[in-house]
View 1 (spheres, rainbow, N blue to C red):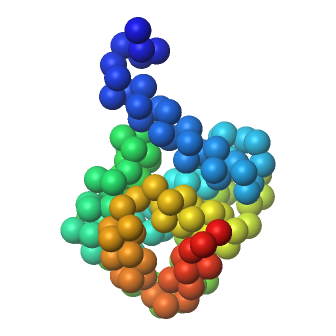
View 2: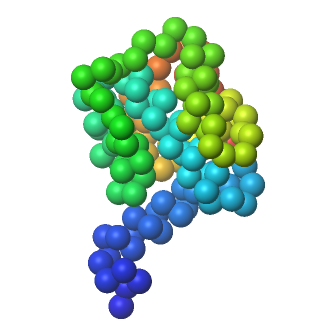
Length: 145
């Protein structure tokens, strides 16, 4: 018998834990912090994508992560225009304010690496290409690591 009684829930819990474990490998053994890192970066990313591309990325995420991704989403106000990497990292840092101090640049690199590892290559490439060049640079640093 499954832990929750529904295989789909067990699978998303297991997959989400894999994602969180990969984040914890870089940021310490604190699942709560890893969850906040994942959410902060995904929301900053989501807010800079056109609604259709954002939805396609959301469809690739584990169900639990998808809920985090869409929390407080306002598609009619997207994409947010980000001119600099600093703007992007500032939003990530804002999402991390309720946790212990975390470097927003390192958090972003980590989540980009997790996305590149688990999301369809074609879809992750479209998301990466939709970002400003300086934000893309953080994503490209994760390739091959």
